Length: 335
Image (tube, rainbow, N blue to C red; front, top):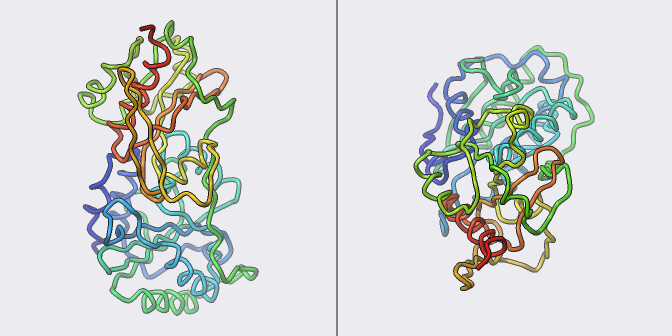
């Protein structure tokens, strides 16, 4: 059974490589009338992807109201949907992705229910998490249904679970969704400045996008840097003499601020990005729910992170990296 069109999913940003990969893996799933054997005995993550809001192609649709409809059906079915996340947040950056994998392991999450919506058409996919690195394997079996009425699909899911013959051991299931917290990738100290040692070390730059595009932006970086493969482990980088590595986080502005330890004021509706270039300050504003990129540099050995002196995010990774480098130059390069 073909899945939803993934064009809308991939059209707004380049994405962490595992994110691009998960959509291919979801498309490859083999439809099955059966559920994972442990579905009604073990914990399940519920992961959402919905169309952007009609008024803005950059702001996510209201997935949390969908979650409030989904959870009662899961409860009735005996599926312990114990944590709900927006799918893209799992893949919000190289470090945060690893944190989420650890988080699922810590909470003993064995299954996933994917709720996917595109232009009013829904697809519900139920499968088990078989791959530590990619969550699911190519071509693994999955229960999946698609249609325009989510309630009908969820009722089909409930009936199918009730008639599955699986032993039901999940009894203490919440009737309302638990929305998972965004995970902080910072293991060392968080610093709102730039390390003076940047000037004497070579920065490791993972090839997270087209090399020519990254090169065009990195050409403004005032110190040495080298490109590295995106899957190289930090331990290996240290053995090669690298002290610093460039990372990013990509999620809604509010979530990025939470992950990177910025103070959140509930009254704020927009976040102001600032960039200083040639002594001139430029500001940009985005709604707090707009997905943005924010770059930072990490000291590999200590885990200390340097987010910079200004909030300098952008909806485009090229701009976000350019802003971070411009602000770094303004502080570290002698005039």
